[in-house]
Image (cartoon, rainbow, N blue to C red; front, top):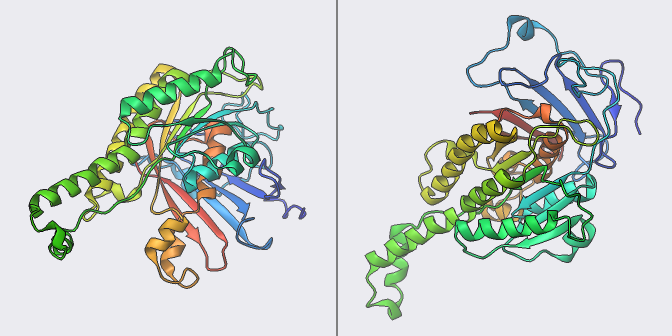
Amino acid sequence: MASPINLSIKAFLPSVSSVTSVAMRSAGSILSSSSSSTTITAFSNHNRCSNNHQSYQIRNFARPGRRPSPNKRRGRPTTNLGSSTNNGTNGILTNNPPPKQSKKNVLVIGSQGELGKTLVSHFGNQMNWNVIGADVLDPSEDIVEKKGMKEYIPLPLDGSVADLSVALYRGVSNYLSPNSSNNIKKSASLDAIVCASGGWMGDVDKFDFQHAMEDNELLEDIDLEEEYIRESSEVCEHMMNVNYYPIVAGGMIGQRFLNGSGLDNGGNLNNGLFVIIGASAALSPTPGMMGYGAAKAASHHYLQSYGPSASEENGSTSVGVLPLMLDTPANRAMLGGDGNDDDRYSKMVKPIHIANEIGEWIKNPHLRPHSGSLVKVMAKNRMDGSGGAAFHLVR
């Protein structure tokens, strides 16, 4: 391991093996409903770059419309050389060692997508937490045996929101039952629910659709207008099925199983976390993909409405994470071009950066933004493979 870098930055090993993390936090940056905080966390990019390159993550969770005090704006950030936990110090950073972390129970909805697999691997294999996966697709053996998924809940394909909610309820209830074979305590609950389910489809282009139908001699007696309406409606319905219904189902499960306010066995603040994956594109109109945009916008609205009420009821935190585009094989294939020289690829957010950030929120509740917030994720990638992501509060 490299030696510490002068007196202003301290290098240490986090829970992710072989990853060097450097944290710089401004003094008094423990988050509250009125706090202003910017945090830069650096991780060595062990996936794509050599040991010389650094990848970093930036948090800016000052609420929109709230400006930090003049002293904070003019003052230089104070480096945290120890734990950033609030051990009864009223938000003052101390050099005390972090308290012992208890083993977490995390539900990942959409565990078979690219982001879902990354979350399962990071939480189960790297963090050594108990991960429950849920998806319409059966999990591959490497996810179950090598990447830490303790339980899998099969979900109905194209099921209603009621079907999804009931399937999740039964699966989680069985896993957390004291009579199960998982050595779960009677009082066990979920520490986090992450809804990574989602998908994209563009709107049906009317001209292309009619042109294709007219060229098909077998469809001469088909009403083209009727078929166009049917196809367009099915796109909207499918987008709601994959982008919105799983979030509503996850919210239902959160009301029943998420941890409330309190401390875990290690003495740490242990209120539950509900995270959804939204889309920064849905913060504005989405012509050409109205079905997708409407489903994501509905998800944002649900999260913003659900967050404050859930926080009042049981102290849990609800956050929406809004990337522009995830760096996945499917999205790269859709973009086309040469990934090495195409600037569009530098704007794609790597799933591991989102997994890292959510993992920090689960471990350290004081790092979270306020409940009901939407956090936009901006990729900060470089051509050499290094870089990271910036997390900015937008609503």
